[in-house]
Every structure is written in C-alpha cells, then in structure tokens.
Image (cartoon, rainbow, N blue to C red; front, top):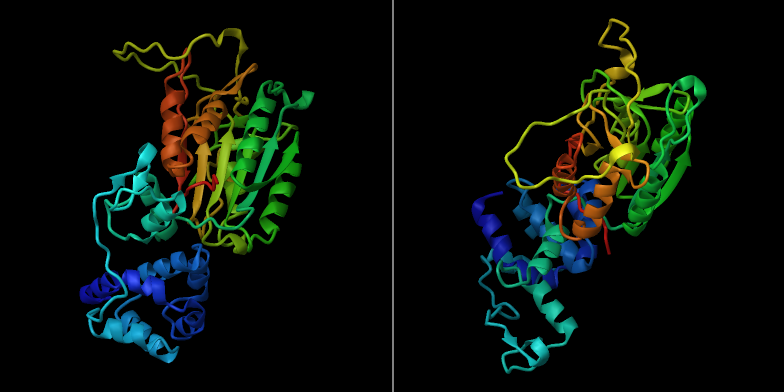
Length: 418
C-alpha cells in the first residue's frame, strides 16, 4: 500500500472505527481477495466491533497496492458511501467530532476529572481512554491493553477456554528403569494445574505414564479438534536425558525408563500433523534434566550470595546417558518440522546439564515460573517472563542451573489473565 493511502487510513481511523458496518464487509473482502477467510477469522476474534474495526484497518495496510481502492469500492458497494467519499476525498470531510487533548484535572479524592474539575465515573474515564488513538494520552496499562488487542504482532486469545493445557507428571518409576522417585514433583504439578486454570486453559492431567502411554496420550491430544481454541500448552514433568537434535534437544522418560525425543513430541502438534492448530501458538514446558553434567558456575564479583539452604533435600532429574547407536541421525531424533512456526519449547535447564528439584518445595524452575507468572503475566509477554525465570534460577546456589527456550513464534504471546 502506498504511503499516502496508509496516511489516509490512519488520519481517518477514529471516524472509520465509529462508522464501519462490519457485517456487510466480511463477504466482499473475502470475495475480492483482500483477506483470506483465516485472516478475517483472526480479525473477528479481536474483541468488540470497535476492536475488530481497528484491527481491520491495521491489517489492511499490509495487503498491497490494490487493497485501498478495493476497500473504498467495497464501501460504496455495501452502502457506506459517506465513508467511501471520506477516504476518496482525502479525509477532508467534516468529522463528527474532533479530539481536543487537554490536561486531565484531578477531581475530589484524587480521581481524574473533566475540564470543570468534576470527577468522572470510572466507566467514563475508561471509554475516553479507549477512544484515543494518540500515544501519550492514556495510562500505561490502558495503552498496553490497547496494543495487545490491536497489534498484528500479538497472538489473539479470545476463546474460553483459550486452549488445552495437558500436564504429564511422572513421579514413580519402575524398578527396572533404574530411575529414582521424583519427590517434590507433585508440588510442581499442583502449582501449574492451578496457575493455568486461572489463565483460562482447560487443564487435562495424566500421572505416571510409560513412554508408550505418553505417546498415545500426546497423539490423541494432537488429533483433537482445536478449531474453537486459540492455543495449546503441553507440560511434562519427568526425568530426562541428553540427545542429539536438529530443532529441539533432549528427551523425556516414561515410568518404564524408555525415553521420547522432545522433537518427536513437538512434531505431533506442528502445522503438518495438527491442522486445527495451524497459525496458533503451541507451547511446551519441559521440567526434566538435559543431561548428567553438573554446573558449578564461575566466580562473579558480587555482594549477593544467592539462595542457600537446599542441602540434603536437593535432587536432580537426570537419567543415565544411554550409549549412542553410532548414528547421530537416528530417525526419531531428526524428525522434520515442515511447518515449524508458532512453537515455543521452554526448558528447565541448558542441554546436557541437570535440572534441580527440591523434595520439600518442588523444582527450582517450576517454583520460580509460577511466582513470575503470578507477578508479571498481566503485563508481560511469555518470552520476557521466561527471561525473568532464567535470571532468577541462574542465581541460585550451590549448584547452577540455566533455563532457556527454543522458539519459532511469529508474534508476542500474552496469557489470558482476566
């Protein structure tokens, strides 16, 4: 779209948002190829009619040189001649009202008032903030909410529930596996189940699954119809091992000691295998060791001594490393990702290293993640939240642990916290 056309859309945004008859536009916009049906579905999930109108105008700017004249033509076709002429004439027609930016007075008891000093009701203040499209005239939280609703760089979460959250909690392992009881994991399980229920996920849980059972359950979840959902979240709490990889390192263990590559798990949900999640965020949280190596860290000049007192209650989620078959390109370790977009895998530890779990308080990673989500999920996107988690966990003592993530997200992801 030409710069002048974008300028006209932005100049007339307030009037267009107030006046567009959206129901009449969807069919012609799809018919003329301005938007695909999937794009229109995303716009219609933006929220209120005004939110949808704003999102439509924002996305219209990205649809090529013919998008603007075609949009004007569709306005004529659908009986919205006044708005079509308004755009054709360069937004010179009188607007119903102009925005007069004035200092906000402080009313009684500290409330914001109108120009006469009278305090405005909360609802009136909110509506005024929502109508302003000019930066610097609204509070930080209102601006952030508006950005999250309107930006085409943020995943839209509007459905209730927003998606499935599937938690596998492996605690008890068979004697033949040689793997220890994962004491403290039930604390992690309860925290995450509660947290993601609050975030409007439909939480599904399974406990103590063999590798074959894990594969079957994950495969069945991927085969579900997610069309009415906006995302999917998989959480695995188990022992883990190091493994060669192309996209996602490591593997997790079933209660029989047999392990499953993380790549194989992720591939069940990619765009090739799970059609109803195409274009939607697919998130994976892995609380498991990435290997057997212990990280003792390095010396920093700092006054901070970090967290202490773990002592004898500290355990790792490491499995003995199985010898390689001699072929690093094993089929299940190099599963392809033909549609790898919209995927994030968060690991409790760096590949090759152990992940620490306290028998009395749960794993370092999940304990910190739950607290960070409680404090900051209202205002920060997932990647920033994971940075906070990594920073806090990395400062713990005596041993060190460095969480991280591999991601192929196209947009920012904000949890649905309200």
